[in-house]
Length: 142
Image (cartoon, rainbow, N blue to C red; front, side, top):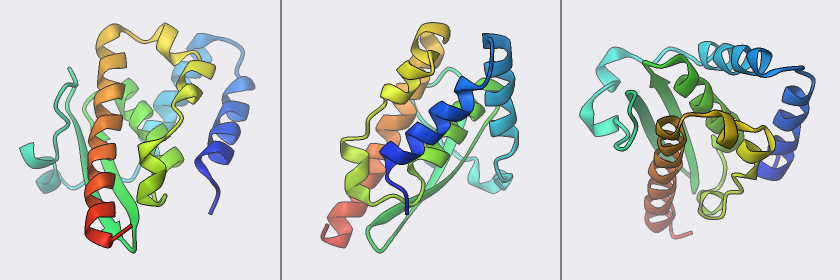
């Protein structure tokens, strides 16, 4: 399995081919639309990320010290950001979440181009995943 640094470099390379912010947003939205559909019964308060203006859900599962998750959102941009987190982190060892390097979002320019609410939402999504990864590591003896 690729490391998060290798995956981040790959994502960065994909976005670097795009010429302007309109293309980058379109590509981000496309990534979100390519996520598998989350069943409506999983879109519950239990899986809702607190701190996001939009509704975004993460369903996590710990298997053999690795955190797997699925996600959905009612916002196209937020769903695209969540899709990047899926690409970057899904299936990684729980320890990888604790020191995850989010400079990818700076490299891609998202911190500069997202509204403060969306930036806060991205931070909340990462915090949610970090907490799930801590729980995974604690219960798996990692």
